Length: 511
Image (cartoon, rainbow, N blue to C red):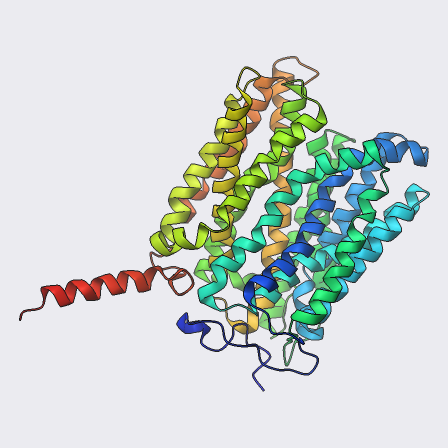
C-alpha cells in the first residue's frame, strides 16, 4: 500500500500522465479524472463563496422578521467570520488525523446542516448559533477541498485542475448579491440558505463515490494553544477590518480588536517558534515560508488579493450609487467578471506552458491590476458594451493570475506538509480578502470626508479603485523574484525550452 503521505500519483514528479489512484479501504468506487475531482471540490467551494456574499442583500428583510434594526444584523456576518478565523488553521491537522475525504465530507455535511438551521431561524440569537456552525463547515471546506485536489492530481495536470477550481472563487462573490436580491424580492430570505441543501447533499454523494481518502501516519499532537492564539488574532483582525469597512461601531472597539489581533499574533509567533524548537507541530507552520515558491506566492498573492477583495464591494456599489442603476442592473453588469473567469479556464494551461509561471505572474500581474485600475474611469456616459468588455477583461486576467499563484505555491512543498500548506495558504487568503474590503471602504470614506460628501460620488469610487490597485501593483516586486524555472514540472515550460535547445544543438552539430 502506498504511503499515506503521497500527495501525487505515481509518475507525477516526472510530469507524466496521472496514474490510477491506489485502492484503499473505503476508497472511491469509481476512479475519476482530475476534472471530475476538481468540479466536485469546486461545487463545494462555490456553495461557500456564494453564501459568504449572498446574505448581505437579505439583511434588511431578515431584520424586519426578527424585529431588530438592520445594524444589529451585522452579527450574522461577523459570527460566520469568527468560525472561519478559529477553524481554518486546524483544518490541515484534522485532514492528517482523520483523512482528507472524511473531513471534507464532514465539512460539507456541517455546512449544509448549518444552512438548514439558518433557514429555520426565528430569532437573531438562533441565527447566530446556526451561522457559527455553518462557518465551522465552511472553514474546513476550502483548505481541505484544495488538499483533496492536490493529493489526487499529477503535476502535469495541476494547472488545468486549479483553473477549474478557481472559477467558483471568482464567480461566487459576484453572483451572490444579484442572487440574494432575486430570492429576497420574489421568494423569501430563507431560500438563501435552502439553496445550499441540494448542493450539499449532492456533494456528499459525489465525494463518497469519487474521492479517495488519505491521512498522515503520524499527524502529531494537536496544538490547542496555537488554535486559541491564532483564532483570537485572526478573529480580532477580521472583525476590525469588517467594522472599519462598513464605518460602523465605536472606533475604539475597532482599534481594540485590531490591537488584540496583533498582540495575539505576536504571542502565537513566539509560541510556534518554541513548539517547533521542541519538535512539535504548530497549528500554522510558519517554517513553510522558507520554501521559496510558497513564500513568494503567499506574499505576491496576498498583496494582489487587496484588489480581488475590494472589487466585489466597490463595483456593485458604484453602479448603484454613482450610475443610478438598480440592484438587478448592477448585478447583471457585475456578472461580466464571472464570464471573464470562465473564459480563462481553458487558456491558463497554454499560457503557463508557453511563458512559465514567473513571466506570466510578472506581466499578467501588471495587466490585471491595471485593468481594474481602469474601473476608476468608468462613467454613466459609457455604453453598456464598454462596461461589459472592461469587466470581462478584468475577470479574465485576475483569474489567470490566481490560477498561477494557487498552483505554483505547492510546487516545492513536500507531500507530508501539503495539508499544513493548504490550511496556511487559506488562512491568509481569507485575511487579505477581508483587508481588501477594509482598504476600499477606508479610501472611500476618506475621499467622501475630504470632499464634504455624505454619499459616495463617482470621484470617491475612483480614489478607492486607484488606492487598492496601487497597493496590489507592489506584488510586481515579489513576482520578479520567482526563479525562471519555478513550477516548470507543473507548467511544462522547462520541457518545452529543453526540447528547443536539443533541436538547436542537433542543428548546429557538425556533420
